[in-house]
Length: 249
Image (tube, rainbow, N blue to C red; front, side, top):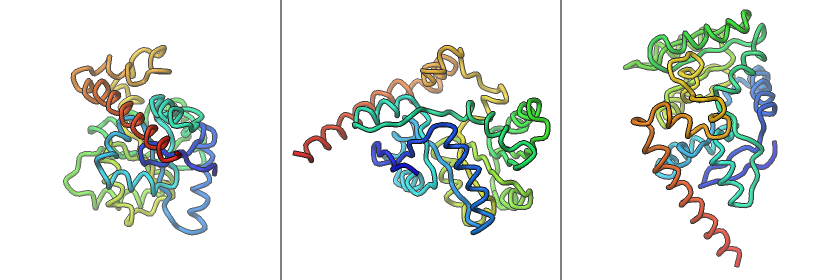
């Protein structure tokens, strides 16, 4: 795989959507040989801002088998630092390609969201891909031992964990030793969008400005994340650029 791009101390794989999905499919085959669970993560502005103050999250991202770009802000940040990321990929976009690859071949277990959300998202996927196998479970449990057992007993090839950052990454770090799935993939709010529980906003807007589309749909909950968070990210990248330039002198 191409050498990773580093932004704010997090290493990101410069892959496009096709390469991302090929890698995940290959991870399933690798598991048949060595039994190791591969971890897939993503980096967007919110994730990188959080990782700057959360060492556990930063460690998780840097030890993931694949960490891809999930935000145009990160593409721009990498460019400011003289690096290149080919594109940003959100879960609401790639999930349909994943379903197409898995239909009739691989099984998915979707964990996370409020009760009924992951189940509705799975139903939406099966409407388009009727031979797709998907088990689901909501993300609100006091104890997850029985959930981990259910995942392992399901025969799933890909576990999608959608609890929001940094909860989902911390959850996966804690339970990874007990999981027996080939791929464990943190997915954020993907189930909310696919199920229709949360709107992505106008299509013409979220294609290039996902953060603005989400801000329009949930302003009271997300204004700090995007308005203050985007400014903080830009400042951090500017500082990193200056630091790199002075170290080269």
